[in-house]
Length: 261
Image (cartoon, rainbow, N blue to C red; front, side, top):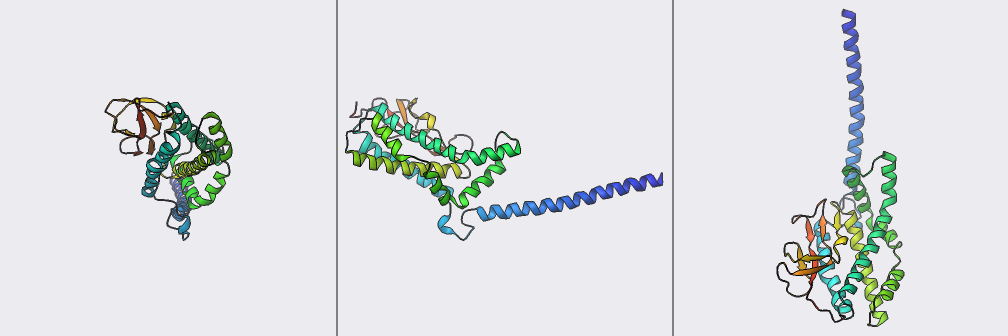
């Protein structure tokens, strides 16, 4: 009996010793991962010129993009030449094409990880590490990403389907600048942590105006007035709430008259 007890104790001791050694190895691996993530966090490494914008800075960029650039191209190019359907087509086409390029750029590495780990989606810790990795050298990644966008073909398609009466050189210059800035916003939103999502499917939908979730693109809109979404909601995290909203959907009232009508 005594020998059995001693053997049992010895077995337990050996198991504990083995577990302690495994814990030491795991602890070192965890510490290495922490250090790697720490080095990837914007502002930590010495290359400050490549630092990824902080969330507050990115929010300002998005606000300026919607309130300034999108407003400029709306009033200077779209409003004088198009009807409501044309305006919707313009923004929806550009947003969808840039969004498709964004997905195609990031999906290969994400698919490899999912196939390697036999998972259907990236777990949050893996997703976070990937975003930090992208952020660590985001300008180089962005240069490669932009090479995937055929700006010329998009401009040709837009000019073919929309009757823009303005000077072709001027309109193409405006459209190209808008495409370049849109691609940058989409790229930054995708690799931001938390990710900033853009609800493209909203564009063109009819809604009842609610100043809690909508902003008027031009002029005053009464509460519950029938309106059309022209520019989509930007929000951070998994769900769109008042707290997670970065910028509201931009709408035009149904009674808004464009010269192109």
